[in-house]
Structure formats: structure tokens, C-alpha cells
Length: 288
Ligand code: ADP
Ligand code: MG
Image (tube, rainbow, N blue to C red; front, side, top):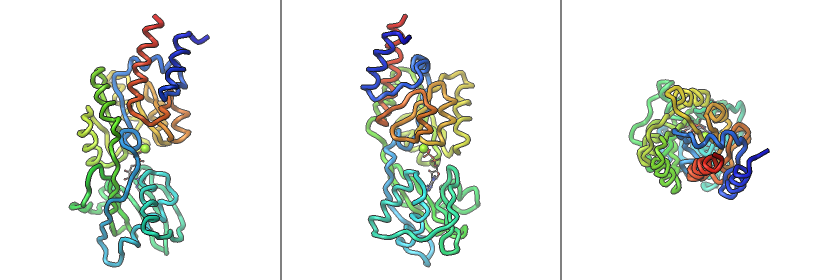
């Protein structure tokens, strides 16, 4: 049977946007000393808007660049893809015909358009393939820049900007007040990760982490004796959520993340993580 205090706090939690799937882990949330947040969609809004298009090749213009990129992104559910599709609509353009679509895990997308190999990829991908990353890009704010390659040649950069959620500042402050270390784990580039981390005053971050490596980073923190909670929203995050001592799926993320998680934050509000820890503590106090 469920102790009454637990049942009561479970109902109370639901009112506060928390769905508890694993009651034991909910009770354990009072032991959390390290919180690892995913960036996109949790600490930030995860709503990317295109803020610049830089074309490096005279044979292309901004319209063509967006058209090629959007033709690939039409097959992706990444927030970057949504941002590029919005730009296509805003510019009143249509997508082209494409074959051989492929997602390159944690790095971008690829496909064949008009017999050419087209890619939209991260700066990390350029580095690995010895393609020089353009320096003077007009990036501003929390900017995630992706690059359009045609037959492995750099054609353009597309800058997308996201915003830090207002609630993130308070969530981090409250966690600090409770003596909990805060980290961020992201597939996004080093520069953007550093910027978000410094702006929020996090204790640390892991950037450019490939989907398969996320779990390892959680293990690393655990091996230092930490009791780790992690938030995540994507299929990519599921193994890391399972690895964490308390796995927290966020908002409208994928079902896979939700199925692996111990707790679900219905409203994608990072402050609800603090409520979760407070509820865990209050519930335990009443039980002993
Ligand atoms: P996260 O979930 O932390 O945002 P991802 O693993 O989803 O990280 O993505 C890591 C990086 O890979 C992105 O910042 C971007 O550079 C690149 N990427 C992933 N998916 C796409 C996509 N559909 N289009 C372009 N770039 C992408
Ligand atoms: Mg993600």
C-alpha cells in the first residue's frame, strides 16, 4: 500500500506539474546533490529563429541556401529544423526534391538534391573533416550556427538563436541555495554552451557530447560519489536518463524519454525540478 503522505504529495506534485512514475526514485530525490540539465528546450526555450545567413560561394544566394537546408530539415524534428522551416515559410519558398535522407547523430542531416550531396552540420563536424570554420560570423545572443555543405564544400552558414528561459535563473539560484551542484550536458558547440553556462552561473558543463556519450558523462559524475539527477527530452537522452540516479523527462519531449524517466516535468519549467526536490524532502520528513 502507498503511505498516505506519499499519496498526498503525489497528488500535490501533479498540481505542480510533476508526474511521478517511480515512487522510490521520487523519495530518493531528497539525496540529489548534482543536477545535470539538458540545454535546448529546458534551460533555453528551444525555439530557434534564423538570425543570419552568410553565403561564401557566389553560385548561391540566401534563397537557395535556405531552400537546400530546409529540404533536408523537413525530415528532422530537431528544434534547429523547425527554425529553418519557419524561415523557408517566411521567405515564401518551397522545398525541393530529395533522396537518401540521413540524420548524422548529434551532428546534422544529409541528403541528395539534384545529384549533389547536401549537408547541414555543426561546427564540430567541420572540425573533424578539416573544413575551416569561418571566424567572423555575426552571431548574437545564444547562437547555434550550422553550415551548409555541397559535395563537402562549405557554401553557407546559418545562425539560429535561442533564448534562456526566465525561470532558469531562479531555478539555478534556488538549487545553489540548497547546496546542489548544477551542470549542463549538450550536443551543441562549446562556445554556445560556455555562454549559457556563464550567464546562468552553472558549476560546469559538457559540450559537443554525442548522443552515445551522454550516459558516460553521467557515470563520470557518479564515479565521483555524486547522486545525480538529469533532465532530458529527446530519444538521445534516454540512456543517460536511465543511468542517472533520478531521471527527469521534460515536457513535450519524446515518449522514449518519458518511458525511461522516473519523473516527468509536464511544463518544461526548470523551477519544477526544485519543487520536486523540495517535495521529496517534505515527504520523507513526514514519513519518519
Ligand atoms: P542537443 O539535444 O543537446 O541540442 P543534439 O545532439 O540534438 O544536441 O545536436 C547537437 C548538434 O548537432 C546541434 O547543435 C547541431 O549543431 C547539430 N544538429 C543536430 N541535429 C541537426 C539538424 N537537424 N540540423 C542541423 N544540425 C543539427
Ligand atoms: Mg536534445
